[in-house]
Image 1 (cartoon, rainbow, N blue to C red):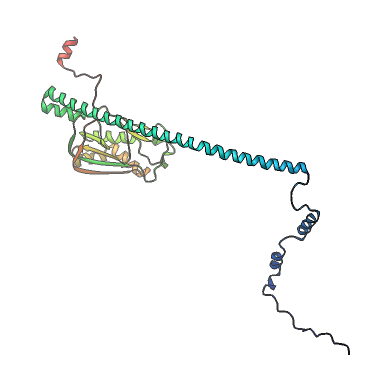
Image 2 (image 1 turned 60 degrees about the vertical axis):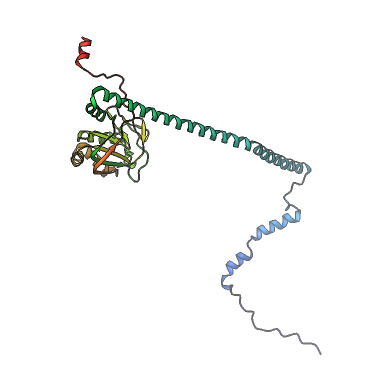
Length: 303
């Protein structure tokens, strides 16, 4: 009796969870295009998949290129290893030289300060010997050769918070870029000082630098110099005088209004306060090389 073929179940296979994403599944399963796959198969059949040159000359050329590249890398590494100590030594020698020169400059600056103090002491002694103590003190105050104190005002002028370098013209207030800098200029400090003198100040200092009749306020780049000494903001101006009267007169003066305009238009910061006692140092040195006192004896001697 012939055997009956096995009966297969008519139940269908369970569907795949990703059946609805057949396109994405096909892309993932067959990432390489059939044409590319066929071309790769032909190359493998011809033995071209290794990518190595077939001829002896080509292989020798490749080997020579690899040897040359290795030689260049080796020589470069050896030279870097040899020159590294030399570069480090030269760098250290340069650092040592800078340190020595800096120390020498510091010693010279200390010596200059001592000589200035000695000159100032000799000047004060000569003033006392020349015309009595009272007249000598007055001359020392007016010339800036004597430290003074008394009532006055304290004016602090500072750059704007968002200040940056810029400008560069002869008149910073007329340069197109200054509105973006907010920097205090030498011209501004000149007007402030002149305004305080005109308002009744008897002695003035900026950041501890006593001003005299020979003092100069000028610029060197973006820095402000007083008697060739650079100042760092904020600029603290101390003035001896009739405190409240001096402050009010300055604020109402053209130079005080100019400073107020700088605050309003360029965000420069300025504060002024009345002080019961401010102390100003003596000027480092007051040297007159040309001017001479005029007296009747001098006139008779020249006639």
